Length: 277
Image (tube, rainbow, N blue to C red):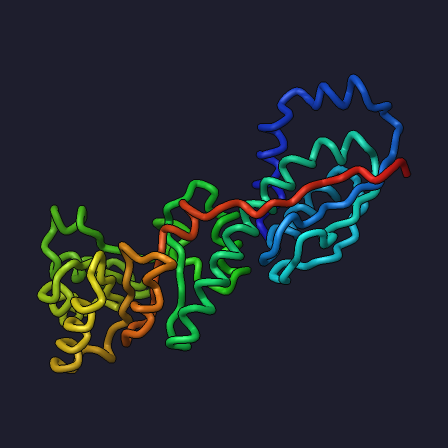
């Protein structure tokens, strides 16, 4: 689960000096019952995060649908009972978290199933193209994908801007010498550089913005040189839900998409007060 302290930042942002509407209108001692409902079909996520937020403010939570489960329009996800002001304070933050996480998890599940139908060994991964890092990465996991790096501290990923300053082989040598415990991945855009990276000892070679036919050429060249089994091959750039199956037909290990976090649509969930408690 995403740490509670991280989630509470969103409550503080939403109500820095309290919820003036509820404080003005709702009696302090009033208790209420409420439900959170799915407004469409998809994979629900963020349930544990919403539960933690409501419980932090003293609201009793009964979970009806758990993270990773399929839901349909009208399904009850959570039943709530507690102080009415507390429920209304947490409402929008909980719905925002669940909506975003469920939207990501739903799209990830669709793409994972599409890829696995072609090649079961390939993994679908996200990228760092997000500011809501912990929320988005957990949503990817719930959907059945790989989070990739959580941060710049996790693994070495040598990109084009690094290589504009340091030659490829030297960059890999330096990275290998820096730590025996960090995976070293190199982003390349040509067959020549893919071979150089594999020969220099990269653990992962990312083929960036290459068309399927270009990737096939790289794979064949790596096999000819006896290098294919020494590296994992990741492909990224220009991959969409429409063409991902074409990439899945290749002998690769990972497909990574920034799309999973920067372009997916929120899943619609709502909270409804159903009466006083």
